[in-house]
Each structure stands twice: as structure tokens, then as C-alpha cells.
Image (cartoon, rainbow, N blue to C red; front, top):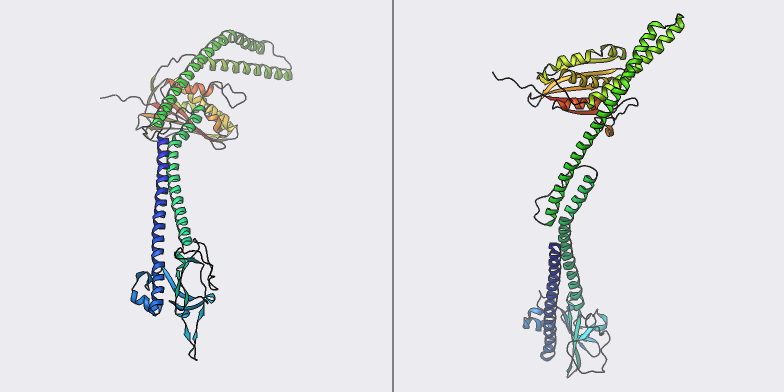
Length: 493
């Protein structure tokens, strides 16, 4: 509604300006015609008076002191008196007045020899058949820049011709007014176009923002908010409603994710229990049987004995691998049973790294545990935190593919000592950007032989301790996992 009112106001403004311009043109034309008639009559009167008085035109002009014929006037360019033979008897232009020859005879300038514009009769006379002298041509009213009036004298017919300035012809004035009208119209159109563009922009900008917001929300970005800019109109209200809808959709999606994870955890828990019950007992029997076979039925032939031992060892390794997978399922699916106690993070990190000293030496990996500044103590379950650090260290070794590199754990504090920070960094192959957001999802793995539970177990352990975990990585340069844990409250003395 407001847009329609604004457009109607712009239309009325355009029509009003155009009407004002046309009204000015009418007034200007009226004044021009009046002034032109006055100039013509003054020129005719000057010519007629010169015929009756016998004085020359320039003398008459000086005596008349007529402003329209003054030196500064640009209305009347010239006044001529021409006889019926086409001789110029008198003129305001000095190069057209009669000249005396050496023999005392008078030499006249012919009207046909001068540049005379098309003529128009200065007054309405009865139709006459007398032809005009050669050089005097009749033109249209719009193009006429000179006017004449025939005067009968005792010496014959004379023509008083009043020549106006070229810029004072009606056609010139109309062209000038047309140009001015066009300029005014273009200026008004330009202003109204700019105003319309601003108005439309103000109305379409929120629509564009809403369109961008709809695409972002459809893509799953429920944190996006459309700028409101405090508009009190319908668009502002629509923007507020859209943002409220986005907030509610975000909450709904979060609840759906929690419900999905809870349902998945239940499924995993049941699956883990079934696996533990149905598989572990046979595995234990297989493992014991392999030990019995190696002890009692080993071949005496050295070559066969070596082959026998290799096969039984491989079978035991596979049994151990299956057992470790079952343990991962159980650790992830079971509710946390933490035993929080004051923990020295540097000691815990050093113990976790010490387990891999042999593997680091064999893989040519440089390991270190460092601390930066004072590291606050934390209340944590030692086994749970050790399991999380161990998983991150294993990931670091796997990322370097046995090609050597660096693996470090750096301890520090943040948030003014209220939180402890653990950075586990490797110089491995890095993680693709599209995989980073899915790293902590259960059963998601970038390795062909991975179960996808290692990092999920790490995140669960960190969450159980009210901590946070994040990851920074760049392909070809390595990865850093950052864990923060609440610091142990300091006892008041």
C-alpha cells in the first residue's frame, strides 16, 4: 500500500512539474508575441515617420529614444524603406543607405542584393495583386523573421520592412522552448527514476535478504539471521517472523539430532551386548585352543613348525582384533561410569605417549610432551582421559603412514586459568575440509579398515568431562586436535 502511495505521489509530482513547464512556455510565448508586435510597430512607426518627415532613419531613431530600437536592444535588427522598384531608400544599416556618385547622382542598393529573411505582412490588409519587388519573398509565420507594410506616398508605393534578430523569430523561440521542455522533462524523469529506484530498493532489499535466508536455512544453516534494521512496516514484521521460525527450526533440528543419537546409542548398546554375549565366548575358546595347539601339537620339522607358529600367531592376532572391536562397541554404548579425581595432565599425557615409544622409534616419528606456562589441574577419570589421548595418538601415527614426522602433546591454560587445554598435533597427511565436520560421528571413518568409533569415543569422553574438542587441519601439513577441560576448583583457605 505504501509503495502504491509513493508511486502515485511521484506521478503527481511529474505531472505537476510538466504542467508548470508548459504554463511557463505559454506565458513566455505570450510575452514574446507581445514584445515582437511592439518591436514591429515601433519599427513601422519609425519608417512611416521618416517618410513623412524627410529625416533619415538613424536620425529618427536618435530622436525617438525608443528602447526597442536602442543600441543595446537586440529585438529589431534593421529597418528598411524600399520603393516599388526594389531600391533601398533608407536603412538603419549604414552599408545599405543611398550613396552619392561623383557625378552627383544617387546610387541605391537593391533589396535583392542583400540577405533579407522571408517576409510576413505586419498588418492584415485586403488581398492585393501588386507584386512585391524582387528580393522580397513571403515566408510562413513560424519562419518569418522580417515584417513589411506597404505605404502609399506622393512619390509612389514604399515598403517599410522591419527585420528582427534571428534569435527572436518564433521558430527559434519554439525550438529553444522545446529544448528546455525536454531538459526539464529529462530532469524530472531522472529524479523520479532515482526516487523510484530508492523506494523499490528499500522494498526489495528485505525480500532479497529473505530469499538468501531461505536458501541458507534450506541448506541447514539454522544459525543464519536476516538483518531486521528495525523496520516498523510489514517487511520488518515478516523478517522478525522469519527469524523466529529459523530459531524454532534450529531447536527442532537439534532435538531431532539428539533423538536420533539416542536411538542410535540404544541400537549400538543392544548390538554390543549381543556381540559380547554371542562372540566373546567362542573367541575365548578359540584363543585357548590355539594356545593348546601351539603347546601340544607343534610339528617337529623346523620348517613346518615355523609355518605352524606363524599361522597360529596370525589367528591369535585376528582374535585379538575382533576382541578390540567388541571393546570399542562396549565402551561407546555403555553409560559413563567415571571416577573423577585430581589429575596431573602432564603426567597423564606423558604416560599415554610413553606406550608408543617403540612404535615411534620404528616409524621414525619424533614425539614430545610439552607445557606452556602453568597448566591447571583437572578433575577427571584417569582411564577415560588416557583412552581419549591414546586414540588421538594412534590417529596421529596412522596419519603419518609410517613415513616419519612429528607428534606432540602441548599443555596450556586458557580463559584466565579456568580451563586446561590439550593440543595433540601431528605432521601427517591432514584431513579434507569436507570430512572435518563428520569426524566425530559414530561409524564414520576415512580409513578403509577403520570402524569410525575411535574419535567418537574421544568426543564422548570429553563430553562426559564437560569439556570441548575441536580440530584444525590442512591437507599435506598435518592436524591438531584441541581439548579443553574445566580446571579443578581451587580450595579456599
